[in-house]
Amino acid sequence: MTCVTRISVVYANWCPHCVPTTVEPMKRYAAELGAELELIDIDVAEQRGDSLVREHGDWAHDYLIPQVFFEFDDGRIVHVMTGFSEGVEFTRRAVERLHESDFYGKLLQR
Amino acid sequence: MAISIVDAVRSKLSADTSCYGHCKSPAHHHMINGTEGQIACFSCGGGYVSRVVMYSAEDGTEQLKSFVSRTVNGVMEIRDEDIRVATRHPWEMGLEENSAGEVILREAYWTQHYRRTKSDDPARATLFRCESCGSLFMQPLNSAAATCTGCAHAGGGVQ
Image (tube, rainbow over all chains, first blue to last red; front, side, top):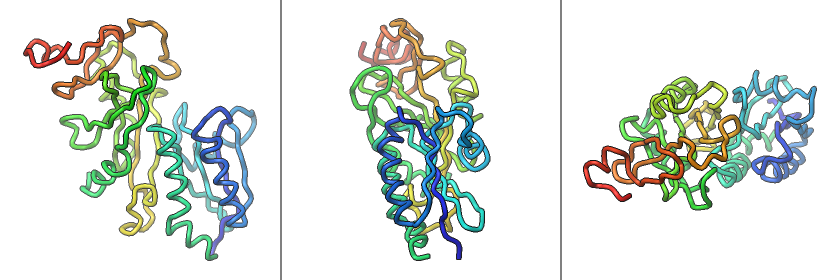
């Protein structure tokens, strides 16, 4: 059985889908899962946001944020959410649905 | 596209949102005729199209780019960088019970007058949705006719 060791959020401080909509709940989720929280600001150079999104997420030249990844103790990195261009309320609901999901529930049991 | 995906789009991705780049009114979700439930737009009561969205099992970037390029008929240039994508998982679409955790859906978005194409020109070429037939058509932003040329000629529209 693997467990989550890190939650990585690729985000920007000016983005309402990111702050507080996604970042604040992810702080709670990381604590709940006993995982490290890595906040990767796209406006700070030399961070690994681009490579993470390119290799594991929804890559585009001007990619959507936030993007959230769970890293497991076996080395797997799994994309779990991308912000909804439809609107902030859609993103907020997606963050809640992740928390309510069976996928997340099973991680809590590990 | 499987029926369950169409249903999921209707139930999870079709709520009203805010008009982007035009007014503060709600923008409504409309499936676009002839796209077999794969392409939708969000438009406000004034017909302004905030976004065009493609729903597909695989990456729909090229298809959406082609669709929007054809729709704007060369009046606007649509580049790869204007299209953005998102993966939707079972738990986001209310389909977790029937899945093995696979990716359910990919969305590709084109947002009007965003970033590279943003403009303050009140007469800029703009994509609208015809309130009569639901087709997308171009006109200057400050024209604001409610119907496409075909419907206006047929006398079925409201100017």
